[in-house]
Length: 468
Image 1 (cartoon, rainbow, N blue to C red):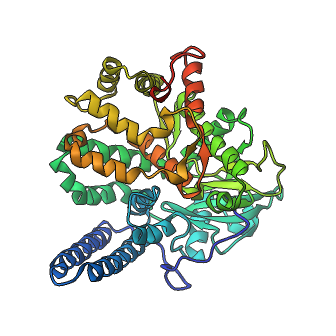
Image 2 (cartoon, rainbow, N blue to C red):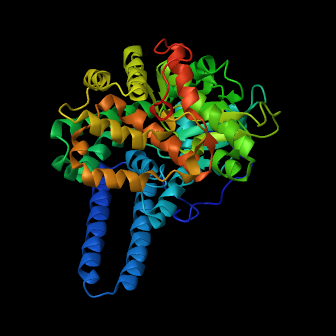
């Protein structure tokens, strides 16, 4: 994370001005999550009972109000807990069609702002990590955070030794130790999924999520990721990554280059169509290049992690894009990322035998009707399958997906392996951002160029089914 020129006001769910650090007590966190579940369940049951005594209009108004109350309660609780609990809330809000509008509006605040810890706590964490008084390292250090996220919050400062402006990411005390217990508690809430997903597959999903979050809580690892992305994206026009400051970085404190700019989502909403297309193409290039050339996935695509840099010259019609947070990164074997391209090429060719072979090698659940698999992927991967400018703003995936799931319920058993969860999550997050900002972009050509580069297509080879 880094700075932006137009800081947002404090979250409406923030505590008093003094603030407080999130609780790291496993029992307290379990109690909060259990209480939240009980409250939401009771409200839902009450709505179902009351529905029998209301007309349709009254029921719609009551449902809308109940959704707002539920969303406010969820947002407040997850924002206070931080950690894995808050990360789940951020994930839920990445796709605008995943939730009803009243809930999405509330949960989206978790992507931009959240209750922050008091400066006295911040000072103690930084001085404890560096082993020196704050004034020995920093000529200035903002008392108010410029961003608060699930694992830590970010302050801006100036280094005493060279006068450079930096962003300082400070981890909430004890939060790293709560991740595994949080996921265990949340796993109990997800147990209803076991009616359609085998227990061992669900457990594997939870373990995948837990292990990635635990790696995210190590800021030394994140500093290494920033260095790697510097190398990986060096040749990508219009994309910048903040450089870490290793001598002042510890496991729970990350010091990095300060970026000045505006958040990507509001910038896209006021930009010209050409500028939106340029920035969207950069985002997709970052995703494709890091994943399929270098087998690294930036798996946290919520809008707060991207900044349009101000005071910088335009490149290809738009100012540079800053890629801020490199904590949630998933590494893959080249064989795995290549299989994903093989599956896409098989979809383009409508090659049923190859689709079956690839899905088995990837580890998807066996026994699905391959035509159902093909139709399902036509719905969820539409932009990758047609050689045209795709109107993401007009793409209403939820209605088509729900109709298909109702008529083909067995497709739910086509459960993915744990390794693909963050890949799918990233695609959903990118889709949500492009949908909300009305981007039009030919994603197929970007994907095809990568397939050609990796040697799975010859130039002017296979075409998507819509063109055949």
